[in-house]
Image (cartoon, one colour):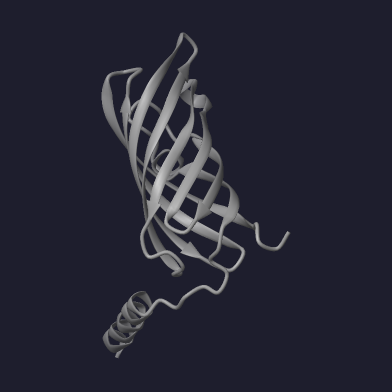
Length: 164
C-alpha cells in the first residue's frame, strides 16, 4: 500500500513539473536576495570545517535577460568575491525556471585581489512576490589556481517596475 502512495506522489510530482502554469506577473522586475553555500554550511569545505559562506545579490530581469550584481563573504577562510552575472533565462514566465549565466568577478584575499570567472546554472521556483533557487557554480579560483564547484541555495524578493 505504501508503495502505491509513493508511486502516486511521484506521478503527481511529474505532472506538476511538466504542466507548469504561467505566472501572471512576469514582466520586468528588480530583485534582492541572499543565499548560502549549502556544502560549507552542512559538511564543510575542502580546507575548512562547517562555516558560513553567504551571498547578497541585487538583480534585474526582463524577458530572457538577467543580470545580477553580487557580493560573497566567507570569513572562515578570509575570502570575499564580488561581480556581475549576465545570464539567459529559459522558460520565462513559468514557475520552474532554469537560468544559465557567467560570472565576471573578483576574488579578494587579505594579500591581493584576483580576477575570476565562473559558469553558473540555476533552477528557480517562482511565487508571485519572490522565488527560491539552487545554483551550481564552477569557478576558476585564480587565488589558488584550480576549479572549485559549489552549490548555493537562497531566496530573492521581486520588486515589480510596472506598478510604480
